[in-house]
Length: 151
Image (cartoon, rainbow, N blue to C red; front, side):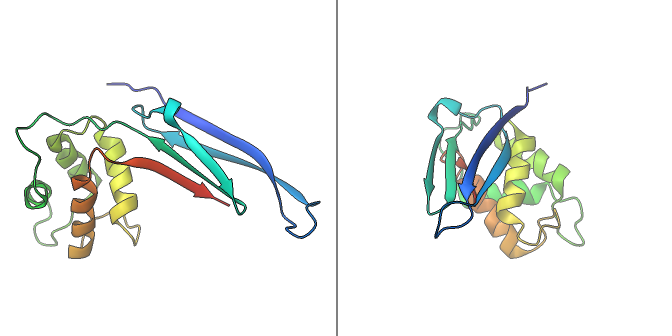
């Protein structure tokens, strides 16, 4: 299923010389968004030379009688481990697990999960710590917001 790409561009200028306010720098920040973002609820604030914005989004899940527990979510991820010797989850395994969890945009969810749960940036969920962070991310489904911040 094709989903159109949503790209927002934020442009402006900021003072580089905090004492005299006469040295300026222009900036351009491009942010790729998921198709289910609520752009009309976007909010941003510029404080202490930092622009921080929040864009809420809907995360539709399959209807269930009751929400999954953290242990049930962990079991779903564990079921998708292909490399049983190393107990590692890669991008494709994560996509399959998020699809099973009912994510409307599993590709997007995997990318966000790796940002959240993969501190070393190797693209793999390979340690107990990373698995705990992944389960936490998936368990908080539905109360998430895309946050961005730059200075």
